[in-house]
Length: 214
Ligand code: SF4
Image (cartoon, rainbow, N blue to C red):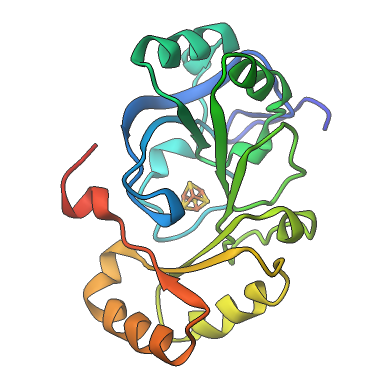
């Protein structure tokens, strides 16, 4: 991917080093297949997906002062003793993650990505969590690569949409349905009923929000 700048969001597509970081922190993974695992989160700035229910809208645009060399990112993580890193966003597939993921692997870290998959994946990942969004669908390459499919359920129509994505994934991909946080009281009972009828799915909850873990 060439370095092309989106003037409205300041996103530099294909950028590899330095990378814009919105926030980074060591915590427990709160959702999906690795819930409860100590994990260092690197949230890259910049997202062109535009979910109306997005809970990190501050990540959509990039500020000039958010750029950090990959060596800095590695040193933040190394200081904590973390063994596992999640690269998230924003939308991390905007960037060329080859250098960052190589450096993290050289340091002995396991590297995950959480992505909606709208841009070609650049980098070497140990775990790919694909969370497709209606507003900018994933590229087909993500379905065969995904270790985990996480569908956010906002309303009843989303179950059909979830099945459409699940059909495209590999047979060993773990399938999760997760309530959209603001609708959790309405949709969680619907998800539980649906999973009982369709047991290939599992429930993912945002445990970090229930437990107030940053
Ligand atoms: Fe927000 Fe993620 Fe959707 Fe981007 S893809 S708008 S960061 S929820």
